[in-house]
Length: 64
Image (tube, rainbow, N blue to C red; front, side, top):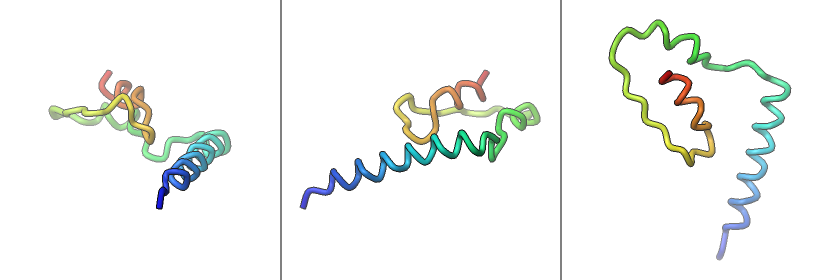
């Protein structure tokens, strides 16, 4: 049975939920940008440009 429709429905709902969550809960749960300055050892950043969960600019901002 082809379940692609179910996957697209769920991913669509999750994207909608992320938008609603960001509007009503604009705080950063992990606050990585604030914490990265306390790291004093080499760090390897690996992040994909096609990631649907975490935008690429998050990893880029941590690197910079």
